[in-house]
Image 1 (cartoon, rainbow, N blue to C red):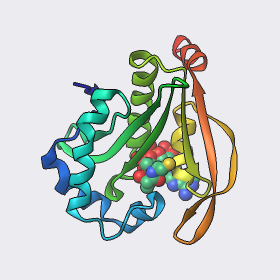
Image 2 (image 1 turned 180 degrees about the horizontal axis):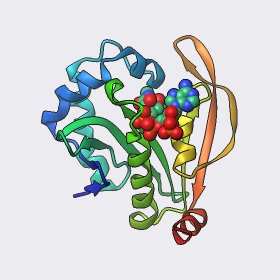
Image 3 (image 1 turned 90 degrees about the vertical axis):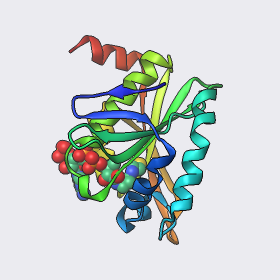
Image 4 (image 1 turned 45 degrees about the vertical axis):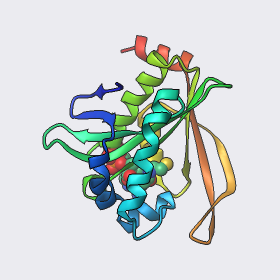
Length: 182
Ligand SMILES: CC(C)(COP(=O)(O)OP(=O)(O)OC[C@H]1O[C@@H](n2cnc3c(N)ncnc32)[C@H](O)[C@@H]1OP(=O)(O)O)[C@@H](O)C(=O)NCCC(=O)NCCS
C-alpha cells in the first residue's frame, strides 16, 4: 500500500468511508470553481470517484491520495499523480479544503509526492498545470521546485471563461541536483 509521510501529514489511499468527508470539503464554491467540480457536490460523486481508486493504483496509472493532518487525523485535501507511462512522466493534481488554506499543507504534500514520483516510480519528469489567476497554486509549484515552461492561452473553459493556463515542470536531473544541494 502506498503510504507517504511528511512532518505534519500522511498521504494515503482513500477508504470508501472517506466519501462523506470528501463531499464536505469539495462542496465549497471556492474549491469547486477552480477545479471545475459540480456544485453542489453530492456524496455519490465522492463515492464513485473513490471506487475507481483501487484499480488505478493497482495498475500504476494514478495515485489519488488523501492528505491527512496527523494532529487531528482528519482528511484536509487530496493529491494525485497521474502517470503517462509512454513518456515516463507524471502530472500532479491537488486541492486543500478551504478552512485549511495558507498553512503550507499543499506545498508539503506536493514535495512529498514529487519524491515518490522520482524515487519510487522512477519518473523522468513531473509537471502540473494551473490556471494563470490561481496564484496560490503557482506559488505551491514554485516552492516545490518546478519551473515555468510556458503559458497556454485560453486553454481551459471554466464557468464560461476561457482561462490561460501555466505549465510547470521538474526534471529528474533537476530534482537530483536539488537533493544533493541540501
Ligand atoms: C492552491 C491550493 C492547493 C493551495 O493550498 P495551500 O495549502 O493553501 O498552499 P500553501 O499554504 O502550501 O501555499 C500557498 C502559497 O500561496 C500564497 N498565496 C495564496 N494566495 C495568493 C495570492 N492570491 N497571490 C499570491 N500568493 C498567494 C500563500 O501565501 C502561500 O505562499 P507562502 O507560503 O510563501 O506564504 C489551495 O488554495 C486550493 O486547494 N485551491 C483550490 C483548488 C486548486 O487550486 N487546486 C490546484 C489546481 S492546479
